[in-house]
Image 1 (spheres, rainbow, N blue to C red):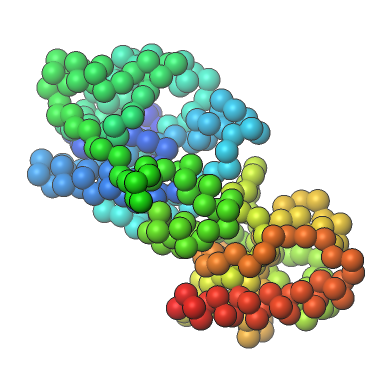
Image 2 (image 1 turned 135 degrees about the vertical axis):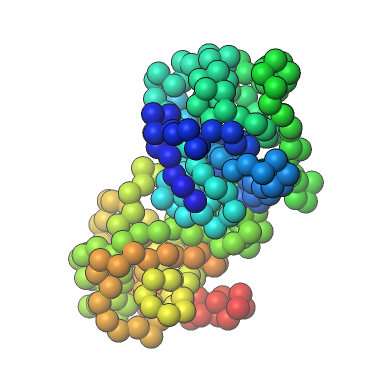
Length: 310
């Protein structure tokens, strides 16, 4: 999958494509349904497929620190998209100038001049352009005038509810990792590189890998049963804590992972943490000994949860 950063990096061979547009945060089953249909269109027309997406997420631009937590950082989203048959992703930097582009100009500049769109596929609630003035009816008029195909995909529903990034975020907040896996078609995952920490875990019998994850906010918090890839060979089992570590007066959010039955150094490695089950919320303990006792219980609970999920 080719990643194209910005309109100025488009070349002649990027034109004449089947296109869809969206944030695709989480790359859930609703997004995958869009991509599946886009692949069918691309195959029928004999053209490449392209997703237009935005960085940062428009919600972060408009709402700042009050924006909902991202499900996937940019790299995580690109990794998930690379697992699909999608040919290209055009990443547009979402800043003040793009937020003010009128819908008609967006069609002309990005779809027609930039990509030479042959087919455009959008969701049933798609809006775009300055103040969200663009809609399907506007796109229909442009398609009729300019001669490109236009189609609309109905929202994917599960259990009578629309599959959305908001629903995935809600399930994560509720600790329902089983529902999250159903909505995204795989375990919820965070990528991070192991950095040096305070090594407190080594002193109490639970050494942890502290993952450096650049996030403004987190959609998960607590103690989890996890599987971790990137150590070598098959994913390893373990438990993870996401939070501020209040027992040791922590203030900065961290993701730390304890791998069962592992000895060795992991510094510098990029790990993929798959969240399998939530064990409990993070809380402050009266002493390090009390924390150690709880971690022993957590380890038993995590092993049982991982056996059940195998």
